[in-house]
Image (cartoon, rainbow, N blue to C red; front, side):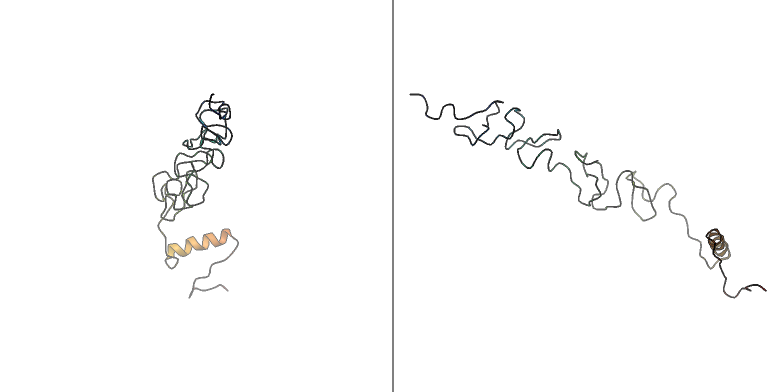
Length: 149
């Protein structure tokens, strides 16, 4: 008499895991048509559920700062976030003067973003402020200066 459980395990893809509960073989193969997908397998970025846990490519993207860019190469999200603890730093973000490498090009506040400040109290600073306010349709009044006729 052959084994009583013969024929109860179905392993169509030959990966050693049966489609159902399993009797002689481990069971719960999520994709018995593909030998690369079975419980306990490593998940890789290929659009498939390789390990039969929570869908395809889960856990491969790490985005600790929530900026939508993965720290590593990325699978479902774009990748190569240079600072995954800082949401204002990711490839393609515009650089601003804030002490961070916002665009992940390796330069902090690069490309001449930060310029030296000119005190408004200096003559040059007042002229610059007056010009800016004039462009905005406003007027600048210097303390102690004559205001006109």
